[in-house]
Amino acid sequence: MNSKLPRWAAALYGVVAAAIALGVAQLIGAVTSVQASPVIAVGGAFVDRTPPWLKEFAIRTFGQNDKLALIVGIVAVVAVIAAAMGLLSRYRLGYGLAGFAAFGVVGAIAAMTRPDAGQFDILPSLVGAAAGAWGLSLLFRDTSVPGYDADGRVLASVRTKEQGEGVAEPERPPIMRAGQELGYVDRRMVLARAGIGIGVAGVGALIGGVIGSRRDVEAARTGVARTLPRPAVAAKPIPAGADLRIKGLSPFVTPARDFYRVDTALAIPAVSPDDWILKIHGMVDRPIQLTFADLLKRPLIEADVTLTCVSNDVGGPYIGNARWLGARLADVLREAGLQKDADMLLSVSQDGFTCGTPVDIVMDGRDALLAVAMNGEVLPAAHGFPVRQVVPGLYGYVSATKWVTEIKVTRFDRDEAYWTPRGWSAQGPIKTESRIDVPKGADSVPAGRTTIAGVAWAQHKGVEAVEVRVDIEPWRQARLADVPGPDTWRQWSIEWDLPRGDHEIQVRATDVTGYTQTPEVAPPAPDGASGYHTISVHVT
Ligand SMILES: Nc1nc2c(c(=O)[nH]1)N[C@H]1C(S)=C(S)[C@@H](COP(=O)(O)O)O[C@H]1N2
Ligand SMILES: [Mo]
Image: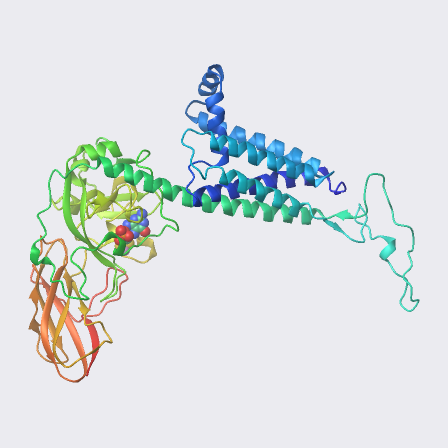
């Protein structure tokens, strides 16, 4: 019996317990891959049984938001019923628990009778209802603070006389009011309990929502995979000699699952290709908006491009090479009509991240793409599904916007991209660099003939030569693997007779412009690391 609980608190507990039920149901729905939460299932069942006049009324009144209005309506009805259940629970907790059982059954029946029902579809409703009932009973645990009356005064029964008299004697009889048990309901405690309950509900709904949207993205990727057009301009086949197939050497094509990732977003944005729009505006003659279908109708170009992150240390792992498929960014921009004094494309991601890319670089004929596929597969969610930019020759932070939804044509002296005020250069051409992959630094290697191998890159210029040296010996030319073009990294290898002892191995690349890497060491900030990659090996 908890009739001393104020009505407002009881009603609040009822609503909080219902929120727990829905939050947990959402979570269970997400982890069991059930398509609909109970609210959606009930909504669907409701829509199927709505008379036509009501449907028309809803569409007339709420227009495009009719589905949302329905969901809000269901949640409101649930909240009112839950508040009533809370009030009834003041008299007997069983009433509230029975209410949750009824909720569970209604949700389960609605879920079971959906046309696309699967065998687990009743789980969210049943587990959610159980969680709500459990939450209700916890919330309704006695909240009175012993020794206080309903107005918060200390009860005489616990006030003892001065010590030494032995027996505690009441000073005056406890105050008892009709219909009210002893005890004072602490408002703060009620709100704290409600807060914890809402927290539990929120966490369940949030995790469920994230898992659910992940699942939706994977479903959308599968859908896109079915309609992905063939390239209008196919990439040259990758030369057989591009991959030296040396154990420990980075493969020429980096599989998507091994491709490095850099995102400022906490969770991978879930962007539906059906809702995706690319807005091109700013210093253009004709602002345009492209849907995903519009983009796929354009001739798609295939290109092998190596992405590199500006934060990559010399010898670091933030580089990967893939075959991209996408629409030519320059053609889209030409349709919008670039104004003469524009020099920057400020691309914006769905998550708010921005890149500032020089207009002349994108327009100079290189394969700057609005990419929809990577290595023959629909772009993975983590790499920008449904659309990302790829621009050969520029570090990712100034070019490779994932989940791109907007391109503002502007000027470097008017706009700043995400990383610029954070200490990184506004301009980010990739520095010519090279890396030793084998042997691994700190490896122990047996004396004698040893293969030293790695990758070198100078995107959009091309790698001309790679040299290696051990200790202070003169530089020796490494053997270069083939490449399909100047936009990818290039594998290299060399055999070296290593004598016993500790040795330092260094590498340097020369690009097609004739520039050779210098020993000058620069940290990644503000515009990319430089210096020779150097490893120490112990030869035994
Ligand atoms: N939306 C968004 N796009 C982004 C980033 C980001 O944080 N958010 N990081 C950029 C950086 S710094 C790099 S190096 C590349 C990395 O692309 P990847 O994660 O597909 O390897 O994406 C670029 N595009
Ligand atoms: Mo980056």
